[in-house]
Each structure stands twice: as C-alpha cells, then as structure tokens.
Amino acid sequence: MVPGYILSSVSHGSRASMAKTPRLKPHATLDLKGAACPGPMLGAKRVLDELLPGEVLLLISDCPATRDDLYSWPKYADVEILKTEKQPRGATRYYIRKGKGQRVSPSTVLDMRGATCPGPVIEAKKLLNGMREGEVLRLVSDCPGIRADVRSWVKATGLELADARESAPGEYMFHIRKR
Image (tube, rainbow, N blue to C red; front, side, top):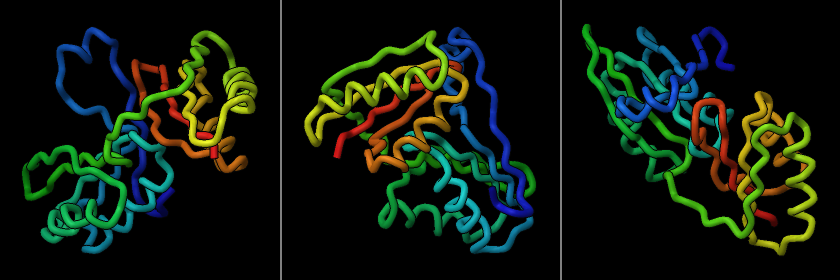
C-alpha cells in the first residue's frame, strides 16, 4: 500500500454487463490528483509491484508531466498503457496493465472452479511436480483467496507467474511456469 494515497479494489459486474460495456475494469485505483511529479509515477510503480501480471491499475493524475513519464515507461518496464481518458479540471485517467499482455500457451490446464482454498494450489503443486522445466500450467479458480494464495506460493517456490487474469467476475486464470 502507498502511504497517504487512496488504493481501492473495484468490484466487477456480471458477464452480460461486461459484454455490453467495452470499459476497462481496473483491479486497483490510485487517485493522485494534486500530487506533484514524479509522485504519480512512483505511486503507480508501488501499486503495480503488488499486482499480478495482466492486472490493471487506474492512475488518476493532474500533473502535466505524468503523460510523458508514463509513455516512456514501457520501454524500460514490463507495463502497457492501455487507455487514457481526459477528465474535467485537467486530470487524466491512465489504465496501466502489468505485463505487456502476451498470451501464454499452457502445457497443462487445471480447472479448480468450485474448490476452496488451499485446494487449487495443492493440486497445482502436484501437477507442476510432474512437469518439466519451462512448461506452463494454466490454473483456473474461483476461490475468493486464490490471488493471494498464488502470489505467496509463487514467491516462496521460485516458480514464474507468467500471466494472471480475471477471466470472468470472481474467476481467475493463472499461467505458472516451472523453473
């Protein structure tokens, strides 16, 4: 969490409403209106460090230099600026995805929808134990704690989280590469 800043999760609508609305749904929102540059970039980096690959941050800034800073960022970091929206009174909304949106082809798929945590991680571990280095497991889960569980597990074991996405409201898809 970034001290002194507002960080909030955004709830997602139903599949029907998502199909009709081409709006991006951020996983976190950081409102830094009034913060001088380079504050918005530093805040965005801190929040993106906590997001999973494929997740989106909405940064709101009224600092005129934020645009130039953000658009040079993808040259040096694994981020993608998806969209900008001008707001009244000089603020701009920047949608930033962690990771450049490359799709990963899995070697194996494990669908654990309906299973409670820590079941999905335990079953994924069993599968990965039998896989070769470089192979990718796609884990699909709707367990409410799965994002935190996968994040901790990957960090603790040295696996690579190649991609993570909310594939439907409350349902997550992770691509985990064995190293």
